[in-house]
Image (cartoon, rainbow, N blue to C red; front, side):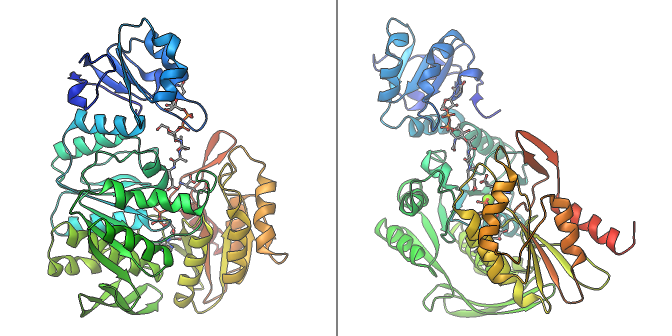
Length: 498
Ligand SMILES: CC(=O)N[C@H]1[C@@H](OP(=O)(O)OP(=O)(O)OC[C@H]2O[C@@H](n3ccc(=O)[nH]c3=O)[C@H](O)[C@@H]2O)O[C@H](CO)[C@@H](O)[C@@H]1O[C@H](C)C(=O)N[C@@H](C)C(=O)N[C@H](CCC(=O)O)C(=O)O
Ligand SMILES: Nc1ncnc2c1ncn2[C@@H]1O[C@H](COP(=O)(O)OP(=O)(O)OP(=O)(O)O)[C@@H](O)[C@H]1O
Ligand SMILES: N[C@H](CCC[C@H](N)C(=O)O)C(=O)O
Ligand SMILES: [Mg+2]
């Protein structure tokens, strides 16, 4: 799935495309991978990070492609395969954007209200909270992102922001199923690769900015620029923007949104934020939040662990208001919100009362936020089990270890998803930051068992990095593994229940 779609036919011009010889052929489907091309398809030969899709044009032609969409470099690369071919060649300045536009026109239907959220951390949570608010108001709603498609239409996704063919297919299927409201995550890869182009987004949110994905983006500024595309490129004129202005990058995004003339709602603890956090009181099961909306104070009980969840909730409030619901209705839904699986989720409790949480913190900023925000909920020590994924940004590993050393009392370094890297080398990089007092336990199940074993009354264990994931990727294989399940097993074993 994903790389191809096809049902019925459309002409190139109906897809917003123009062949270089001006002919307007019918196409029977769209493919962005040569291996999924069927007779009559348009093959999008896109520039990739490993290869240029144009390398596969001869193969796509053999498979029966009737049209090829590519960029200038691709057309040059495939010049000999394309010369004398009787299909249509579309050369676009930005072939990714052209494909996304074509996908939007292929499917046409989208939920009436689509909002999108970007930022280094909190996208999944904000999208889920927004969808939950809508569902409490009786709207037919979905959230779409890292957790797949959830809500009144459901599907699995391989990516946080899927390729445009998958994305537009899902939006149209959801619309056909009666979904009127969709909240989606806009990942920096997705924005950079124009996967969301053509989606009619009526409101965008920005959460925060810290280090991630520097294996993909050239630097912090390029990573930020990708996120800014939501506000200076994707959002329609007159759309709304909900921006957390607590950090420098938030204020920078505010300027970008204001310059664009978007209707901005600001969020944060900052004095002049329109949705402003006034105070938070924490206990073992959640928090009381005092906040103001356009100057009016409100109190709400949130069954959510972690101070940052209040920022995520207020961003969701901003999006729900921007999509047209009334403040009264939206505020009534808040006490019903529940956490996203694997986000500061209480997964087990020992007989002595000590608690175990699973969190998806897999970047330095998230580790700091998760540990710092757990602290006021915990009277005793915080034990932290942490590792880092292989084949991803290497620079973040020592920083994640350092964050654990700084904000946890006991640190156990273990494997995350080593993928094709040497697990011991990844652990060593994490230990570099975690310091000599950290314990290294390669096997993740054993690390969790040791973490649980260390808990005395009042303590809490935070298992970082894998959140909702149900597999551990070692080499190219995926082995069943679920942090929440391992925590329950460890608690049961140590408390003598199995
Ligand atoms: C780095 C990255 O984002 N890569 C994405 C990108 O692939 P690429 O440009 O690197 O592809 P490539 O391998 O160089 O190939 C170039 C082109 O040739 C085509 N091809 C390739 C082989 C072939 O036989 N025939 C063929 O036509 C490919 O379909 C592609 O269009 O375009 C592909 C098609 O859309 C994506 O599947 C692929 O996602 C890869 C698998 C991926 O893992 N991406 C991750 C990092 C990602 O996108 N993550 C974000 C953020 C997650 C987060 O929030 O943390 C996400 O939104 O999920
Ligand atoms: N507002 C926030 N500020 C700081 N950290 C946060 C915030 N929200 C979530 N986090 C941390 O980031 C982790 C991931 O949260 P979430 O899945 O909502 O974000 P995301 O942006 O979708 O992440 P990803 O890009 O990995 O999918 C959480 O488990 C938590 O540790
Ligand atoms: N979407 C993120 C998830 C990382 C999760 C973490 N467990 C890891 O494997 O690094 C990525 O692919 O970079
Ligand atoms: Mg996410």
